Length: 328
Image (cartoon, rainbow, N blue to C red; front, side):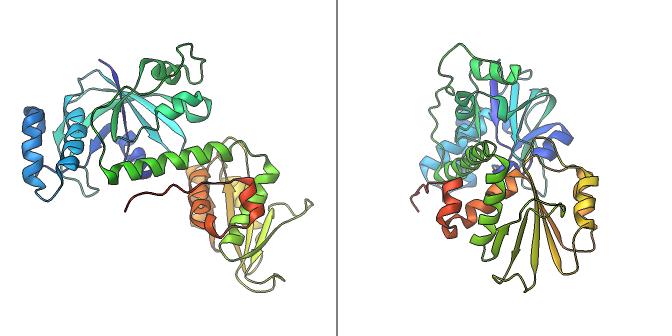
C-alpha cells in the first residue's frame, strides 16, 4: 500500500492539532466538492474552475498533490514531521477523504491512527535529505521507512532518495518547503555545537538584534549565562538575562521557576533550551510577573536566521549560513 509523507502546514503549524484529533488534512479549496468520488481529470476540471486565474503549471502541480490525498488507500502508512519536537510521527490512514469547514483553512481531512515516533536526530543523513522533499505530499521509499521504523538503524540499501515524482510543485509551495527544510538542516548543525559555542551563539544573536551582549564567566550566580543591554556599560534598560541549556530533554517547570526567581528588578528573562520545554514550564513563564521569553531550538534558529545579516564575523564563524536566491 506504500507510505506517504505529508507536511502539516508551513513550519508544522498543524502538527499538534493533527496528533490530538487523529487526522491529516489539506487546504486546497474546491468549494466543498466531495473529491473522493471523482477521478484525477475531474479534480483538474473542478480545481481549474475554482481557480481560473492560476497558471496551467500551478493547477497541474496542485491537482497532483490533491489527487494523492484523495487516492491514498485506507491502511496506507503516513508520516508527519513536528519541527517543534523534532519528531516524525508514523500513522495508518483509516478513513476516507472528506470535505470539512474549519477556520484554520483545512478543506479536506482523513482520519489517522498515530503510533510510533522517530527522532530526526537519529536518522541517517540520506533519510533526512529524502524526507526534506519539496512537495506537500510525496511517497516515502522503503529504505527510508525502514530507517524511520528502526529509529536510527543502519541501512544497507545505499542511497535512499524519495520516489520519483512527475508532478512539479508550484513556486510558492516549493519556496516554503525549501525554507522549512533549510531550518531543519540548521537545527541539525546547532545540535552539533558544544555548550560554550551555544552560549556564544546566543550572545551573537542578541548583538545582531542591536544589544550589547556578553557571555558571563561561570560562578555562583547561576542562570546568567548571557547578559545584554542597549548600552555597552549595561546600565540602560531593558536588560536581558539569558540562561542557555544545550542538552537533550525538555526543561521542566522547576528549572524555569528557579530562573525567574533569580531575575532582578528591571530584568527581562530569556531562556534558551535546545531540548525544548514542557507545557508546565511554558505555563510558569506565562504567569511570571516579569517578562520572560522561552526559545526552543526551532524558535531560536528562526530568530538566528532573521538576524543573520547583521551578525558579526565571530558569530557567523560559529554557525555560518548561505543565502539561497529565489526568483520573485
